[in-house]
Length: 492
Ligand SMILES: Cc1ncc(COP(=O)(O)O)c(C=O)c1O
Image 1: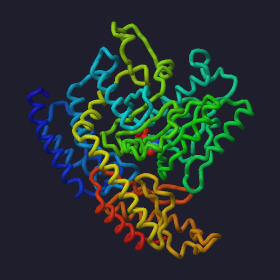
Image 2: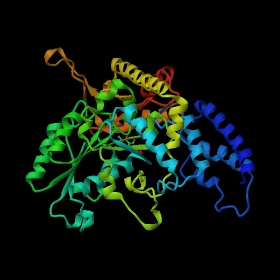
Image 3: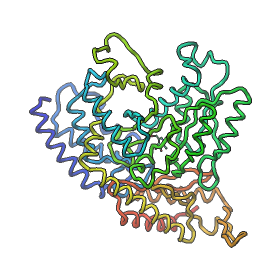
Image 4: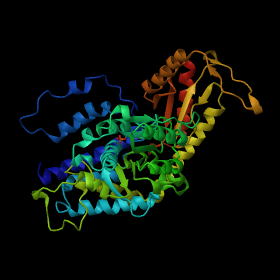
């Protein structure tokens, strides 16, 4: 494709994207394709001769679009928001078009320096301490792995330069919440700590936030048994219910043992742009790292995860490489992001963040986040007030966790001491699970909205995660009517 051919096809493609975004609200939210259906629509072998752009675009329309769950739909309430603001799409396109190779500062100085400036903007916007430095990673999963590798090496006195963990005299232990995202466990296993050395610390039965005393006890027990606490991973916004672990109380406990304190704020990090939500990271000065995903609620298109660290030197000590072919005269004066993470070659991801913040502006982004928090609060109130429905966790961010509990499946609650009313007790949990999964399937199969079932305390519940860029109050109100109708019609 020559630049002239690119110009013509590119204009068509931009028009197609704009049209596509306009019709997304009319598309079924959940992809309705069956396994293998997309692959069966593609030619089994690569073409020997060039095809027409129009033919490729026609296949995108015919085969690819039906195979996408429409996360940009205003009726998408699944998992967590995965917003792809068009401002950031333009930045992503510019990044692809420029085609920079980010292996060292010298290979694309702008790639490094725009990233330094934009991560500093976001450090300031989210209230992280001065001096913390950020880098863009692909995902929060990778960011957590980097933090765990740094934690392992610090705790073991840089054992990688000796016999590695295999030569260590005592196991290193890691602590997190049972509500933490699966990527935390994955990072701990990949970093070589071993499943036997990962502690799932008890959480509060109402808030689902980590109990600091339980953490202190677990760490003390390990020390007494000759093990060495290496890291604590705090969740600010768990995936299941957006519970917020109490960082301010946890930080001194981690510090007592010299353990690396990593904060996983993958989802909730966006809310730190709101000064009134900064309390979520009270105590951050006592942490070592924090990761969050602009590619979720903020709306910088995937993939865009930020990892901030108090001392970037602790990453460099573990990740640095210095082969002759990567050296330049600027070494020593510049940031080498290759030494802050795992990959050598990096995309120019900072451009999409830079475009996003400049074209949308922080004020509008803050207004949207506040809109979503208000919508979640409103839905929470509707659910709490509706007979037969239950909020199964506090609405601490923009996700509302609910269960429809038909009277036949729940023994009535009653008045307990102090005039409080206790929740009804589940009489037939398996039937309740069947009922929950039946009405969720009906909602998702309808194509009119998409929500995610998830387990909490061993029972299915439903997460309604508000925050698609296009979701307004009337979409949330329509969803609530749909949920009530499908739940009323679902069997068990
Ligand atoms: C709390 C939390 N941490 C980590 C992740 C993983 O994010 P990523 O897909 O960027 O690896 C998620 C994903 O939803 C999450 O909710």
